Length: 439
Image 1 (cartoon, helix red, strand yellow):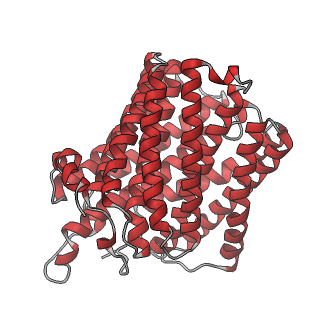
Image 2 (cartoon, one colour):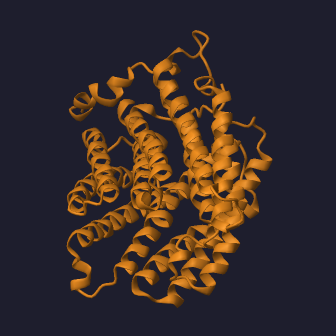
């Protein structure tokens, strides 16, 4: 049996339906976000951003942290009821924000923002209380920092939602562009990528079965200090309009993510295990971050406050968001979803009867196809950003991304349909009441 850690404590986590429900709903946001971007064009940009970054990525993070913080640490989740409550609140809030932007109804935004804040803060409180009792290591440090960023991001987002509806920022003399760029910086580099880096620190050694080298330890020490300081300086500098502060922060962020990518690439190169969809997608992320980092550093050195340089060099946003974030999330889902199902369906049968491996629960051919489609989408998007593609390259990128997103969702939902002890309707709705009142 490959890639099955022997020291997990599945009983410390929430009921299986809680994280799986997060992942299924998040996959629906993924497909919807790509579809809105393909059909809505620039008009649907803010809706697409919230569907993908908030709906898909953040709901996936919420489900994964809720499951694996207690499982990794062996500390029982603080509250299973709160874990079941956080998803409907956050999902409804994120969907409302996307609908308000897409339909041009700003009055919806503050209401949806309050609901989203309630869901995300419930998650942060629940996981934060659990982390407080967990052993302190590199992953838990990153997760604790990410939770703080989740609180900051949603608070800033609520203010921006109020501003869209009432113009409150103009009345107090605060430029919206400063708060919006700080909000986006804190969301991507603070909440999302801090979680990604922390998760990679735990998952990559486990699934590559490699030991840390002297270089790995040096890179980790640099990232552990440089990245957190860099994100704070970059976001704070943009909020204050202080270019020198943001410049220092941007350089630290770019250097720290490059260090993460070098360490990730080295472990993948030394790994004695067979390649899986998870590790293959991590390899794509390593290459993307290594290409993104020097160009981002150059752009931020010139003008870290420019809106076009929000996520680094204007021509390399796809490297960070598709390669550095998207491929890590998809790759992790390709292990997490089958792993949770395997633990609850097959782990107690191991040694008594023939059971499938984690990798047998999904279709490897579909996984290869969605990897090709999403890689093509990223390359086409990169060409469009760089202005070197033909007319219609953006439409082709969207079509390839939609194809890849549908294949990912179908393959992972298929794991539940074929192997889960609970039916898909039970996971999505039938078990909600039971999970809310499960002690």
